[in-house]
Image (tube, rainbow, N blue to C red; front, top):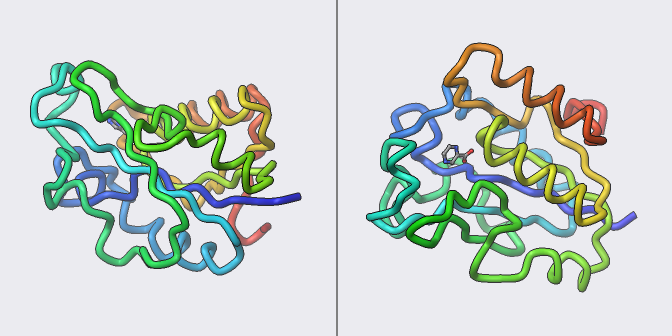
Amino acid sequence: MNQALMIVDLQRDFCPGGALAAPRGNEVVPVINRLMDRFQWIVASKDWHPAQTAHFDKWPPHCVRGTAGAAFHPDLDEQKISILALKGTGESDDGYSAFEATNMDLIHWLRKNSVDALYITGIATEYCVKATALDALKAGFGVTVITDAVASVDVHTGDHEKALQEMAAAGVKLMASSEL
Ligand code: VGL
């Protein structure tokens, strides 16, 4: 099995102090840094919005391309990242899934590198992590979500657990980083 680690949207705006923060956003960073040593391929996605987008009718403005809020969490070991997938780059798309990246063809890149299993981490469990995991399943990859390496914005209490259950029901494996 050729495995890749995916780090979804580990950006300042999704962490405490940011515009659309996951309360536990900081806690996943050391877990992800440790996991990175175990993988040959590491894909990181970024929400990369224009300043004006219909997406901001639904959400407070966040991750505007080139701004401080769109930068990676300062403690993330960025140099280990193999490839960056930028999404939500248009004026009307939500770009929840990393597979909606517009700067690259993510499925093509993964297949070219013979990746068949994806281990997904990052923010937010119930939006971008879930959308990425479900798209990965549809594309035929084996998908595992690392439960202590994902954080939710939890707009509604229970969203985190509900999202994990939905993913599991669709065929995503759930695993703690200690089980890897
Ligand atoms: C996200 C809400 C809005 C995410 C992005 O990264 O999960 N959530 N935009």
